[in-house]
Length: 301
Image (cartoon, rainbow, N blue to C red; front, side, top):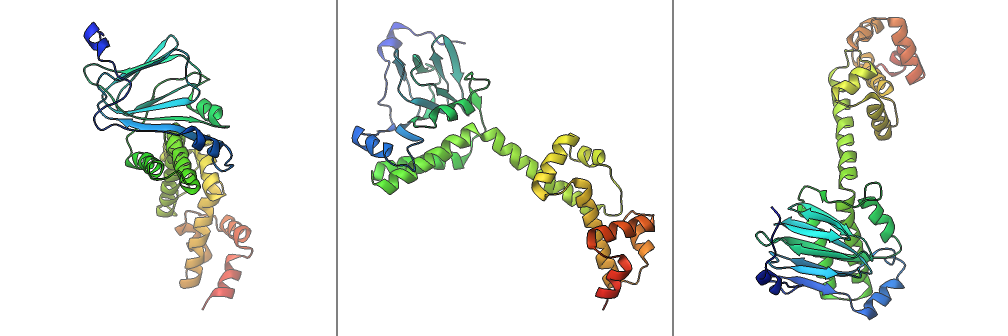
């Protein structure tokens, strides 16, 4: 249900000054120093803060702001209006207000938000903002809460609070970049990690089933991925196609049998799910550069 702003509430509107509030605005002379620093001038903050339980928080800029404004909500609720579009932030969501866009944001009356916020700009600010949008349009983004993300913010704030020395400003802005990308690239990052886990899981499955034969479709289905996606991420991770990698595992295992046992080439092939001894010998020779019998002769104790 939308909040009804009464006259009493309007009289209590505040821009800042909340219990537990933390806020730092970069002085103009420090901004000028940052602009000459090639390490951080491409993306840097101009203001940073945290407003806990920001009752009656209300900020309106009819002429917009010269920087992008990121608002990350961790508790409560609040609303952001950019031009004629209204967005609602709830816990574990964030929004980036574009530069120069008229806007108005405020905490809900019943459950005021707790927010981390940053004003940022630089040569790369527009490109980073575009990574936040979908088809060029902004919207509220929802992300799981992560302690490490909050730690990055705290480190950036602490450094800025303690010093305006060049190295501290550099480290602070590098932490800022990491903080922003942990939000904006969250889905991409976790997709990559998930893909990596899928590849590791598939390799483990192969190792447990060296006596079997699988098609690429069966291996992809086992990981609940499409064949195209499975093949792509597997090759990115290992440098080989899944079937080639599976055959390599089989041949590696066959080398152990040739070295440590007296099993025949045909028997070893059968143990590895290859009943055709001629095919097994050809595959072994292709991957090892010599036939199974030659390998045994060279390496057998």
